[in-house]
Each structure stands twice: as structure tokens, then as C-alpha cells.
Length: 229
Length: 205
View 1 (cartoon, rainbow over the protein chains, first blue to last red):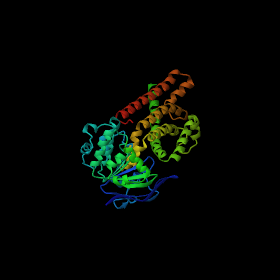
View 2: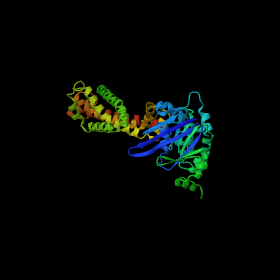
View 3: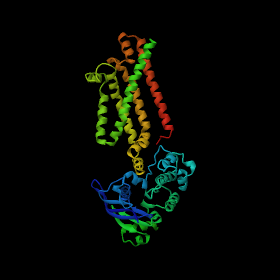
View 4: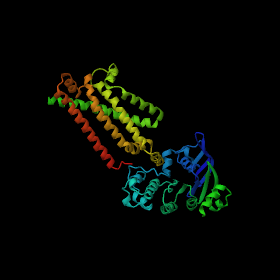
């Protein structure tokens, strides 16, 4: 069953066409890496799903219903989102960031613990946490409402390789429909059962690693070249 | 003498509290509106700015003929003080709201918070130190400006000052000037204390 689908979706800002007639389907429970260079439209694509942006043409579907038909707040509670800069609230402790979006009676400590955040860190403010700990808070906050879908916009790009791997493992262990934006092929292949490759707002390639290795596209090949050497 | 100083001080304080209170009540929502309506908002800020450039005595003169609010007395003085207090509060609140990162706003929206919740739980608390700085500036300057209120019969410490000036009595002058100065310093100190409290409770960036 498809959790999310984009049908002929375009997005333009002024004269600039950021996404052009994108058709994509994301199956429930699958993890998809959305790969592409800066400005290829990856982040825009995520924001069209949770309606932070509205498409100029086409339709986005979630759970068999056009996202336009949802009340935005209800839709967003079903779609966990972690942006690149995390967007943590500087005046709230880690505990409050998570608790605020947690259903009544559900434990904050258990969720935080499952993401490797110890009890002793929960009463700290974001500026008192390390980069990796902040990432975990942002993940816990996105997961607080137990959404079936998780939208991740390059959340680990600022981390060192060891922390990055730890957090990737946490993502792999989640039982969610995950859309993961990255510009790192290694990360895309590690996390994504399927990779969607965007260039200039168009889908250039979609498929698994084996199919991707067969791709004739020069940029896709160039990406693979980064894995060698 | 002591009695009259106390009475005029209380009158003075009354003028300031009402004027700054009303200005805060108007300027903070105005700032929120200006922040969301950039183009019209800029116009509002410039208009408030223009009011500030009119000398206080001239403003009394201009507003005196106004029906209901005009006329000699306390009401007009409060109106003028209110208009002067708008700008520092408006500007500082706007500054504080602008300081809330776009990423913070976006993630609040993405988490399903309503615009009202974002304003109450995120934007205003983050802007609080800046808003307090605006209130502080407005209060301290209004304490000074309120002395002019005596010119239109609004009472306050200005009464003693004007009387002292007219009769060249140093004692009377000081009886008006010292409480006003003390009041301004006291207000400054109280606001400083509140600002410190706010920053201790973790509202830092």
C-alpha cells in the first residue's frame, strides 16, 4: 500500500521552477533516500508532503487522501519532520520539547532512552547539549506523536562519521515510512531500500542499489565514483 | 510640603503607569501584526516614528482641540505619553520577534502547532527579553516626559518644577526633580532585575 504519492507535482517560486512534474510513490513501511545536489528540490519535496509548502500544480496524497483535504495540523501530527537545522526551541529543555508533543500519559524518558538520550540530559537546554545530543532531541520530538511517517531533511549532515553511523542505525531500527533527504550516496545506500535521484527538480532515477549501479546517467555515475578512491 | 511631594509623585506615577500600560497593550499586538504584514507594518512603524519627532509641548498643542480626548487635563497628558511610549515598545518587540529563527518557526509548524500556539509558546517567550528592554526604555523616558504634563494641568511632579522655575525657588525645584529622578532610576533597576530573571530562566539564545 502506498503511504505517500506525488502525482504531476510542480513547485515554482517566482520564475524559478524548483520541482517539475514529479511522480513518485512511497510504500508504507519503506525507507526511501532522496538524493541530489544542493538546489535539486529535495527539501522542497519533503515540505510539499507536510504542507509547509503548497504545489503550484499536481497533487500530493497521503493514506489514500489528497493532503489538501486534511486539516494541516492533523496531517502534520502524522508526519514527523526533522529539518537540517533541527529547529529546536532554545527556551525549552529537552524534556519539554518532547513532552509538548507526546500524547497524555506516554513516557518521555522511554522514548528519549530509545534514542540514546539519558534521563540526566533531559533537563538541559539545547545550547547545553552537544550536536549529536541535539539531533537525538530533534528525532525524539519528531517521534513524540508516534507518527507513521518520518520526513528527514539531511538531519545528520553536520555530524562526525561515528555519530552519524549511530544515528543512521537508530533510523534503520524504526518501523516507519521514512523519506530521507541526503546528498551523501553512502548514506542513501545504507538507509534507503530505494533511492530517488533528483536533478533540477526532476526525477532522474529511482530504484534500488543494483539498478542504480546500472544507470547510464553521468551524474549518478559521478556519485558512484565518490565511493571509490 | 512632604504631603504635596507625595501627592504629586503619586499623580506622576499614575500618569506613567496608565500611559505605558496602555502603550504596551497596543504596541505588542501591533508589533505582532507588523511582523506578519511586512509592507503595511513598515508604514505603521514609520508613522509611530514620526510621532516621536514632534516635541511634547507641540503635541499637546496639536491634540488640544481634539474632541473627547483633547482639552486641558490628565486625559490629554496620558494620550501624549501613550503616543511617545509606543515606539520603543513597538520597535523592540518587532526586533525580538524578528530574532526568532525561521527554522524554529518552521519546525513548530511542522510539529502541528497552531499560529496562536506558536505566538504564545515560542515567539513571545523568545522575544521577552527584547520586549522588556522596550518597556524599560518607554517607562524611563515617560517618567521624564510626564513632567511636561503639568503645562496642561495634568498634575504630577512637573507642577513643583514649573512652580519652582517661576519663583526661582531651588527647594521647590528639587522637590520636583529629585523624586522624578529617583522614580526613573527605581524603574530602571526593577526592569533590570526582571530582565536578569528572564535570562536566568533559560530564555537565552
